[in-house]
Amino acid sequence: MSTTSNLKDLVELLNDGEKFYDEAATKVKTSAYADLFRRMARQKQAIASDLSARLAAYGETAPQGGTMLGSLRKFYTDMRASMTKDNEAVYVAQLEQTEDRILEAFRDDLTQSEDMELRRIAERHYPDLKRTHDEMRDLKRRLAA
Image 1 (cartoon, one colour):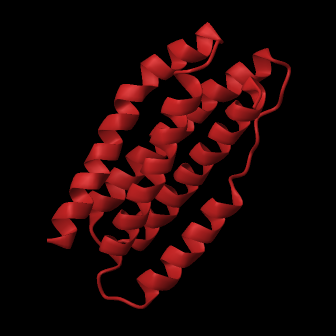
Image 2 (cartoon, rainbow, N blue to C red):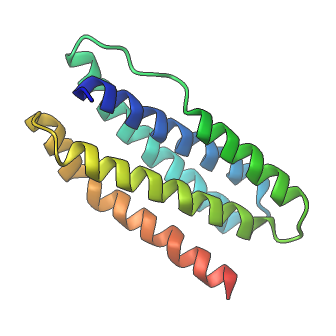
Image 3 (cartoon, helix red, strand yellow):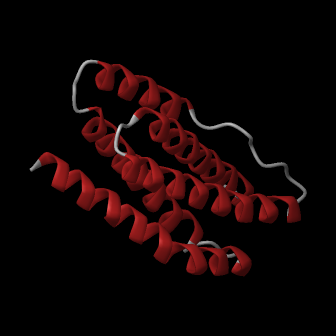
């Protein structure tokens, strides 16, 4: 797969994450979770912006939307959340899976790239992505306990 194709896929994943976090922030009752979700949405947007700039350097336009899987995941989560009193646990579990997808794709696609600028972007953002992934994983475990 080409560098620009990988970058576009990553931007779409990040767009999924941003939209999903923004939507979840409006649907949870706990303000601390809403704040957390908004912070994570901003992080996804910032990383997508960096990758979009790299795409522009290749003469490509970054995708504005997300993936079909991301749309299906949001729909599924909304349905499950509407059927339970504990919608926060449902959102956190699904958002943690979104973090898994982003972290894996980011690590696999960017850290292996021959494009040194992409590797620098990966090195700059990976620690924050890993930290937010772990934060969501730990929150998911606490809510499940």
